[in-house]
Image (cartoon, rainbow, N blue to C red; front, side, top):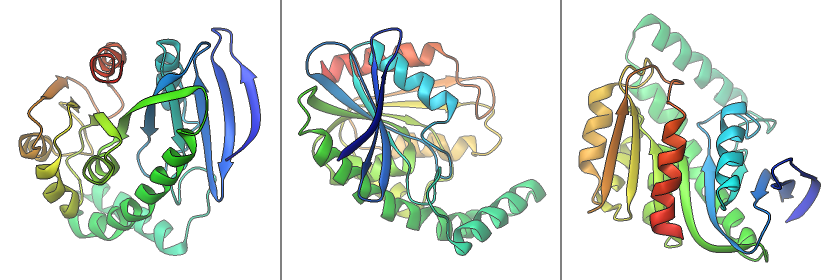
Amino acid sequence: MRFTSEQRLADGILEREFTLGEIPGTLWTPGAGPAPLILMAHNNGLSRSQPRLVARARYSAAQGYAVAAIDAPGSGDRPRSAADEQARADLRRAMQAGEPVDEIFESFVGPLVERAVPEWQTTLDALLTLPDIGGPVGYSGWTAVGIRLAVSEPRIAAAGLFAGGYVPRAQREEARHVTIPLLFLLQWDDEGNPRQRALDLFDAFGSKEKTLHANMGGHTGTPWFEAEDKNRFFGRHLK
C-alpha cells in the first residue's frame, strides 16, 4: 500500500489517498488511537469521491471509526471495457423503457461482484497492518458485494446494506448463509429497485439479528439521520 497524498481536515480527520497495485482508494482515520474499521463500498460505476459517500465517510470517521473506500473495477477513474460500457447503456435503456432488465443485470453486475470482492479482501489485508487501525471490521454500502463479503470474509463482524431489489441470483442464494448482524436500509419509493424484491431479500438473510429501516423517498433520498443510526449500529458491534 502506497499513500499518495494526505490532508488533515478541520475536524482532525486524516484523509489519505492510496494505491494498492491497480486499486485506488481513500482512507479516513480519526485523530486518536487504533480505530475499528468500516469498509464503505459504493454502487457499481460510482467514484469513491462521490460527495454522498465522502460525507458519510467523514461523518463516521468523526465518530471514531477508520473508513476506507476503493474504486471497484470499472468504477471511478478506473478503465472500463467496451463490454461494460455497452452493458451500462443497455441497462439504462431497458429501465427507461420499462423493459425487463434481469438478464442484462446478471451479465453485468454478477462479474463485477466477482472482480470487486477479491480486491476488497486484498485491501483489507493491507489496512489491518496499519497502526491506526485496530479492528474489528464492518461493511457499509453496495448490497451485492456486502453479501459476498459477509459469507466469504470472516473478519467482517457486521454490515449495513443499502437495499437493492436487483441483486444477482448468486448473491440472493448466498444471503441465506449470512449470519452477521445486519442493518438494511430501504427507500420505499426507489425508482431503480423493486420494493418487494428488497423485502424478500431481507427475509432471506440468515442473520438472527437483522433490522430493516424503511423511509419514504427515491433512490438518493436516504435521510441523514440514518447515518447516525448506522454509527450506533456499528458502535454495538465494533466498539
